[in-house]
Length: 251
Image (tube, rainbow, N blue to C red; front, side, top):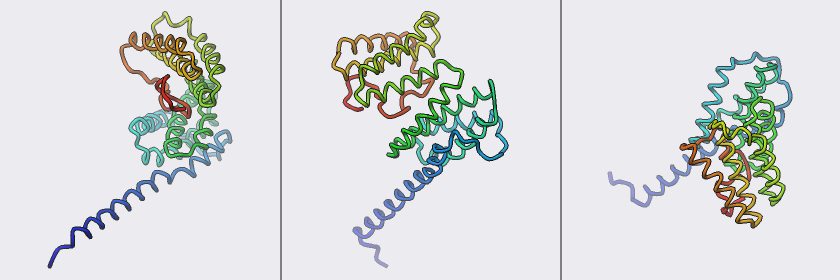
């Protein structure tokens, strides 16, 4: 029996690939309604459901971060709704130091969520994810996590072309850890360099190249002193308006 004409075989392969691609994107977007619901209700105590052990939650947050850094969007989209719900239960089921640890997990989870929805084009959800992210960082008892939130907020100011305010805001943020720089803590130094880098971006957008270069030189010197790449607070993709280059043309 003669084989199918090459043109028909190529057409069939194209249709198969299109169907596979369509199903893949359907899976990626399938979790968005549940994520939208969690973003709308994150401050509302859930129904009386037992809290999962902290260790289990921490392991799942680490798993979500691996999905995020691997840009595994379908896995992340399927995984996040349930995790956000479980963290909401934990938030409203704990107090004191236990709750602070949950807030730390909550911040990391909403950081991954913000990246997911932003990459999928849900800009409104990316903006909504900023508030729980800031709450988590602010209540985590971790000063550097709070400054990571400042880093993101400055990025939003830069996106809104409010460069002078961003520079002043970042200067105030750096002042909170300036006295700690000489102690050589890698996380503190990493945050110090990141804040200078963001100041460089703000200054460059404002047309103050000399100021931008000074900030970038400080950031570069700090990075060289660290001798390794670090991303302790997932700053690289935490929200709209971030950029890795002070002279880039992006937001």
